[in-house]
Image 1 (cartoon, rainbow, N blue to C red):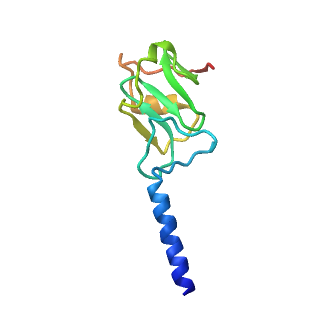
Image 2: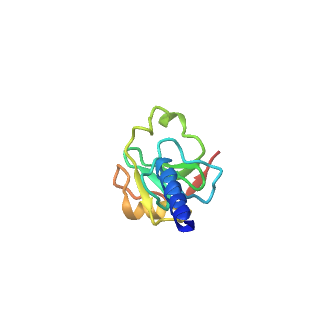
Image 3: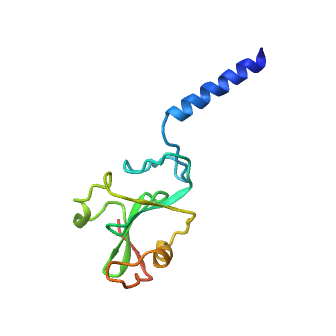
Length: 127
């Protein structure tokens, strides 16, 4: 009888958890991911990359990184030249297994800029 109650409770919890949608683990639980990021499974992801615009979103720091005149810039809100972009409808790539603070190393190894030049080695932070 006791085993049946435990089993029923476990089934009920599993149904509730699976019906709630995606589960995202982050080191900053108070900062929810942006509305365009909806994984369909549990993943350990820090960065999301928008290849059409060469923009990264850091889920841990909750800010954007983009290349501006050869310098990687980190901002909380995208500047006016990117505000026309609807990130909800843009294609993105989840960067798995890369947890470093320095995205330029990953970008240099995996992506090239539109001009074919390698990106700069400097990351500049703006708020």
